Length: 279
Ligand SMILES: NC(=O)c1ccc[n+]([C@@H]2O[C@H](COP(=O)([O-])OP(=O)(O)OC[C@H]3O[C@@H](n4cnc5c(N)ncnc54)[C@H](OP(=O)(O)O)[C@@H]3O)[C@@H](O)[C@H]2O)c1
Image (cartoon, rainbow, N blue to C red; front, side):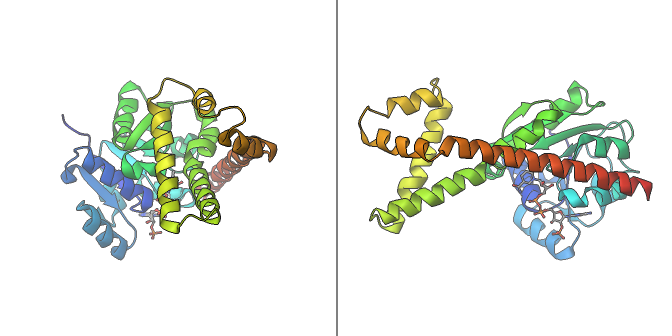
């Protein structure tokens, strides 16, 4: 199988996670290039990934099948100003920048296929969850190319752009909620008298096992939970405390807050790009 050539613009955490995932998925290093803005970062990324890292945005972006935007949202406008004259309609621009609307890319790049994606960090172990949407010029071939790149690091789902704030709040930020649960459960286990290493091992394997069971089982989370909850038993006692303390409502509010913040950041990104287009 021939893999598309991919430029990853922004050799930071997400850029490196994707680069390493593409290598694991069989991409040749020669079909990949990373863009950094500091010599030291470029050499570090090269040492870690064995992929060429350049400081030249034009050399990185020119002629690649897929151009991945992996800089922080605040740096997107500047990066676009550096590459827009070399991006051609045959290329796919795949943005990972959280909250930056497709309109920002489409107004800077004429007639180019834009795909906006929201990945998450379990991509580092090929267990990522990425939702993406296609812009007005993204035809089936462009979407298939973007999907091929994104699925190198986990599952993908195509949704409409208006749902990406909700995606950000659920799967984008979701790993942090699970890590918080792991922290809190480990602390509770230690307070119950378990040694630190045992508490950590019990929690990590429980999260891993429950996640694996949920993902392979044809039963819903509700059913699986009911099956481990005998009336009057220990799990029932714990779940009663969680429900009583507002666990479900709190999670709902947390997701709402993240989605709201994602909307606000999107509005800021649009405003910033409007300003930079005027200049
Ligand atoms: N990390 C996550 O969990 C996650 C999840 C979903 C989406 N994302 C998205 O992925 C993107 C990258 O996030 P990150 O966490 O990987 O950030 P990061 O670690 O800061 O990486 C961004 C990299 O881009 C470099 N950069 C910025 N402007 C550049 C330019 N004009 N030319 C070349 N390099 C440039 C930065 O250089 P310096 O080193 O000099 O700053 C930095 O190394 C963000 O838009 C974020 O919203 C991240």
